[in-house]
Length: 157
Image (cartoon, rainbow, N blue to C red; front, side):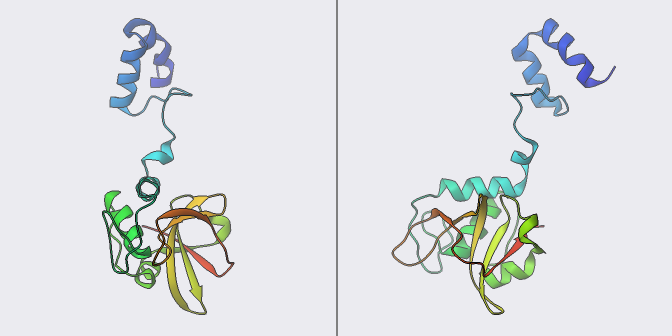
């Protein structure tokens, strides 16, 4: 009998709350509508959640959190909280990621803004053509639509 076949009998014998606890501890039982999406556990998704939690934090050149950020400071801080190490600048981060196409991008990937071969800005892709980023002096961390086609995408390894 597989773990999925045992779910109804587990729930009947142990009660719903206990079955949920078993699922949380075992990690292999999936209960539709209750268990979180598997992607929620990835470092990229965690980093995206960290960046979103910093909404409204002021931009400060050279800052890497926890209260103020520049663009690469926000991405570095967010991924560090998710258990991944990134270098300090946007260009260094681009060189550290696995480069992917725009059609392969997923929430949690990095979006690099460039002029020619020069990477000058970075944010975390939030889906639906939007990024979380810390844009410039006088601004704050925010969710914003990608405003140019001059972007490259990178996936943190």
